[in-house]
Image 1 (tube, rainbow, N blue to C red):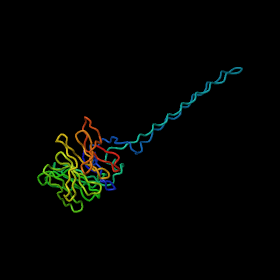
Image 2 (cartoon, rainbow, N blue to C red):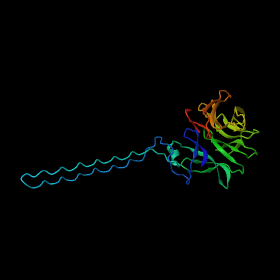
Image 3 (tube, rainbow, N blue to C red):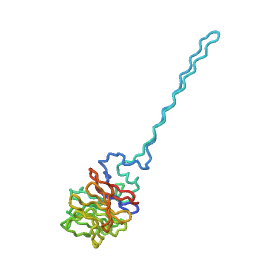
Image 4 (cartoon, one colour):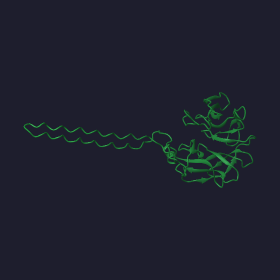
Length: 275
């Protein structure tokens, strides 16, 4: 499995898990019925012809033969069930038209950033440092990717320009930084550091803490912007919370359960959260 993000036709980045798009390891199971047409129903069995009647006994007035039994009606075919395969083509069916950014250790176990089209073509390696480069996220215009790297000694947020391939460091925080995502207008990058979630401008200015976790066990992770960019949505242990960018009005989105809940992603219209 490759954890990454899809750049849609509108330039919005949606979190996805890509299941073996490049072949191998995909079981082809259904993902979501959605609106994808089902397989055609099976053809019903033909009506059975009744046996002919028995001829009457000859005599003065033979009894008429018994009428043949009415044939049994054919059984109608079963309706096809809508199904969406869990392989590469499913992303196209979901409306994704751009590229996937993901990290992979495919080259000698060195973790780097790659992109490819949603149909599995045009695999491109973007980084080749001996450091760990991971957790890519597209900018809204699709021209840059933010990612986590320890190329400067500690894990920090970096940007790569997809036109020039130039890499710049965005954060320089003591407790490391990772799990970045862009705001929809491209003016802010959210990230996790320590027990808290933060925002910063792509040029490295305006560092602001949005929500502070109590400790490592109750830390906030994987921040994602709300559809209107007024809030961050993030996970804490077994729940999903949200807070305004000024740090006020923290609220619970998904209640605490005993199972693991993490990596929330807000839908483009802001009505739903996947996690």
